[in-house]
Length: 363
Ligand code: EPU
Image (cartoon, rainbow, N blue to C red; front, side, top):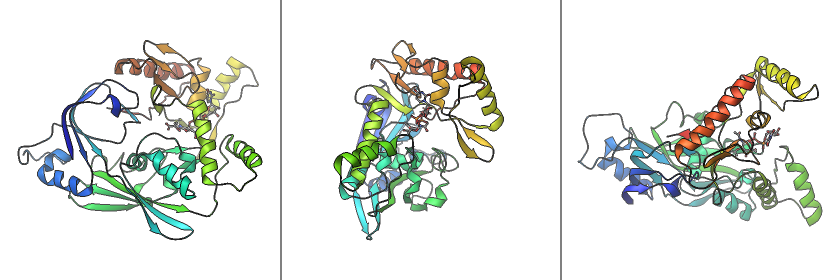
């Protein structure tokens, strides 16, 4: 276990913002987490009891992070940041349906690469997403037609109220588009310690999103071999690399905004504004979200407002994917990212009357 006071968090947020926290705690096992809880019940996000445990209370508030790949620190964090360093990948057996348990601290893409190496189908479309496995289960990460919930079986957690471990079936996690109970009704109560996935050694590619199928067909034609998860992973990584910034080169948190899901009447309004401004042939990309709702790509709305590459100081809208806000120079202050967010959000609202909501969590 590591406990550091006044920790620099630059390496712990993929925006690369130069922020710090009062205290940083990293634990390597469920036993260490239990020990922290026993020593300091108040410090682990429990309801206020007025006491400070054994006197070693961690500064509040408490924040659990993965790799900080979906966080925007708006200022120095005055409390304690917890991080799980629980790292293991264990196969539970099975032949075609393989159950694999992964520690919350395993880098998501390390798990994806491991699956590809083992020839196991499941997370290949989610290759290259920054962050860790525990956070992936909280956030229900998604890309290229697949979401983590599609192959999550169980989410094992530590309950900060009872001090016991508990396992949630996927149906109990109430997963939605980047949503789960861990972000809503049970926020702050549970710490994900590991995630059990249902993978398959039988071929089950999902290639219907965008240009994935045509890119895969090209690889198949060139190689002349049967399709493997590793081939799909390579295709996904090259699509991502062509569109999304690599956090190692330029700071970002991936998609900054959620794609808005709006009533059909709002979509009709956007379509008519688009026709007036860009001519009768202008078509709004959209997807049926059920129950009379339509999902419109935020990237398209932002692009139509001419904001691709928009820069304000050290922060900018990424020129190849306008859904992403970047720390362009590596020197951006939180206020500069917030100013670009406001510019994008206000411009889209005044042009289309659609409010964009951030996917990135503001801290
Ligand atoms: N578009 C434009 N201009 C652009 C880029 C895109 O008009 O410059 C329009 C196009 O019509 C395109 C549409 O926006 O078809 C959607 O773009 P894209 O398919 O690239 O995906 P997205 O909806 O912008 C979502 C996820 C990404 C995920 C991709 C691929 C959200 C908020 N984002 O983006 O997730 O990688 O699909 O599946 O749902 C993330 O969450 O951090 C993330 C990167």
